[in-house]
Image (spheres, rainbow, N blue to C red):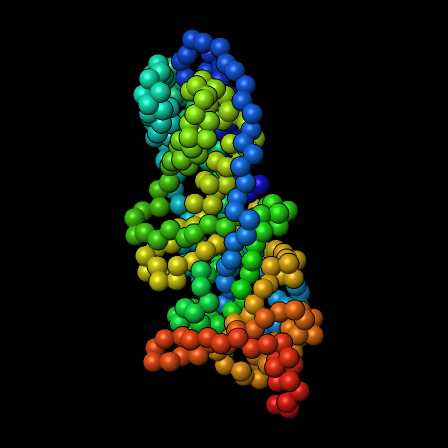
Length: 323
């Protein structure tokens, strides 16, 4: 998993304990974890120079960078709200579900705020430390983005990898795909919003369960995993609106500066614009070591990109021509 709540869990443990933060007067019941899974496959695109593509092919890897290795100096930098703001959202969420269910409202114990403030301070430190070391691989949503070819593929002289991610592979390497959110607002985050988003899914997923049972479920590993992933992924996937035209997707992992050995399992096609000597070298290596790979050629026509498919045999003939 990308991130699992640590000491912050004290809040939710208290929520299921009569001595804790939330006031309630009845017993609790168990709840089975969800068996819901992610979609089967996800397709992304990685624009690269010819040299970068050749290096990745030789290593068979996809690189997860540290935030300081990316081109935005504000990567993964944010502030967090105080504990009162967190508890305010959490309590309103619980009572929103209570109102929909016509169940009894919940309130906070007067002695809980100061105790939770200390819990939150420690948890925020752990959370920041974790986010600072998350591995980030910047990906695109399509292979025909003219600006991306210019920025990251050597002005069209490189290539674009088409990568397909399976749920099993993502689980094996503890990876998560997340779209970048673009905003010019201050990056002040309330992680209770992530908790709220996950909690509000529970009444839909388990309509037969009472609010009491839903609050028991937030201690389950499945819920804490979902909440932790959502919170960490959102925190490191915020960029200014100046970058909005890139429409970036992010592949996230728990560690940065890591070369993941997943390229053979994920690479499906290689897209290109110009058959330069450097791209021809990429193709020579590709078809010697990735023999079942497809290649797609794109060309500009009056400002639009059209594409045509080249077969493996045509590429092999092309490799034999001296350059």
